[in-house]
Length: 159
Image 1 (cartoon, one colour):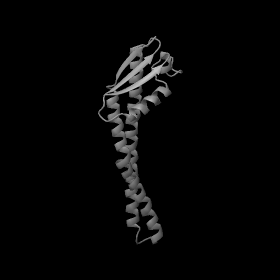
Image 2 (image 1 turned 180 degrees about the vertical axis):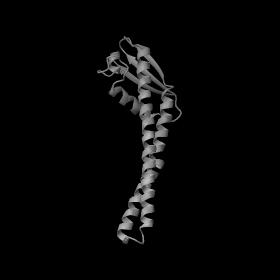
Image 3 (image 1 turned 120 degrees about the horizontal axis):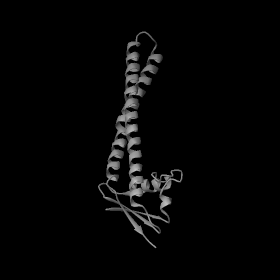
Image 4 (image 1 turned 45 degrees about the horizontal axis):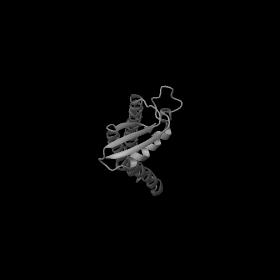
């Protein structure tokens, strides 16, 4: 069980001051939660304990927390889509340049052919880098968001 303690004086400290509907957590709270989630062990259940000297609307806090997760989920899905398009684009460009280098081998001098092949190889490498490095990050982020959806929120009111 991983416990995150959040101490506030007033419920409004939780929310972004520009959002009058109080559906958006403040950037300070969001950053703090992100930092704390990064410290937990894999598989740990999460409890978010909010300690406040005044009353706190549990449903509003839960809604803002779920909105934060939804925003991160959308951002992660967009990044995954962007990675896929970029990967396909780079792979196509790379294969085209490598093929052009092979086809132009006897026609052009060795320096232009090598430059064309290097550009193609670089594009293929960048596509592979997305597949090897970036895509696993989005999968890990997706698993983290899934775990965050099960976070239990407890509110302690202290006088």
